[in-house]
Amino acid sequence: MGELLSEWTWNVETISGLILLMTPFVFVVLERYFPYQKGLSVFRKGFWIDFVWYTLVQSFFLKILIFDFIIAPAEISLGIEKNGYISHWPLWAIVLLFVVTHDFYIYWFHRFQHSNAWFWRTHEAHHSVENVDWLAGSRSHILEIIINQTIEFLPIFFLLDIKTAAVVVPIKALIDALWGQFIHANVDVKLGRLGYIINGPELHQWHHADHAEVYHANFSTKLAIWDWIFGTIYKPGFKPRRFGVWYRFPRGWAEQHVFSVFRFNVGTWEDSRLGSVVTNLRINLLNWFLSLMPNLFQIKRLDGYEKFGPKPELYDRIQSRFLKKSA
Ligand SMILES: [Zn+2]
Ligand SMILES: [Zn+2]
Image (tube, rainbow, N blue to C red; front, side):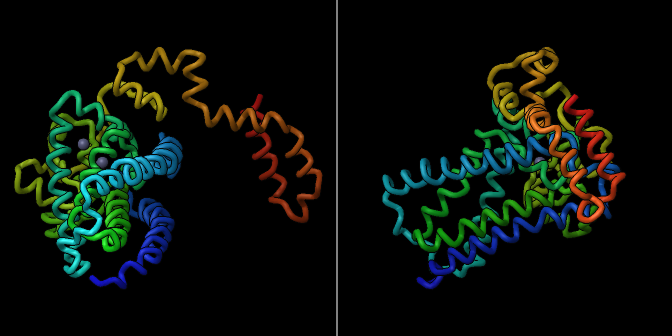
């Protein structure tokens, strides 16, 4: 690993960003053709919460918090920017080392979260997804991410000089994201013998099942080998019937985080007037926005859909849907 790699940083980040923009489409297509659970829609229950709040908003702010406010100050106070103990290793060996060691750590931390009542509260949100698909892995409690990513990325800055770390971090983050999408994907994959080493949807879909047999099984993230070695594998050869947690869990991002600290009656809250406004905020905002300009669609329609717009019957359908919602 030479100085040259520092110049790759920009490229590595751009390429990994582009890959991340494309993979959801690949998984969505695979989920249509080879579904693990049949009949799951792309915009399944909780899709917008997971996509907007967990994937876009939360991860944006946590990236700043973890890298700029935890890792960078730690780096400066420990004086580790120039360490570079293993910077001379080939890139593949560095990445492999961090993938395997962090995966080993996360197996045990994940197992601990399932056996400790307080730490379960940092993990239950992840299990609350009832339709597990490529996006489901993004649903993670703030604290869970802060702990896991600090433990994941700080050693990279400890063992590598800053320039090499700047290349390794985006590669590692990309591997995390892709592997996370893969193990949660609603795709029926049989890994065969590879399944003794690599984790995939078959084992992790079961981990998300609401079946008592798997409340303490299939803890692996990337490498299934830990479950096989430590005796926590569950692979029955048939598919689960129920997914999610066994108690009522709030639907909104904010409520899910409040619930982890303070238990409240979810049914009472979501049925209350304020609760239903907050829980259905996106739909409410959209309806309010549409109600401000009921004539807009009318104008468009009058403006000559024959030439440019969709077919008249489609317009009728769209319009009747909007009118119904904003009524
Ligand atoms: Zn779990
Ligand atoms: Zn999961």
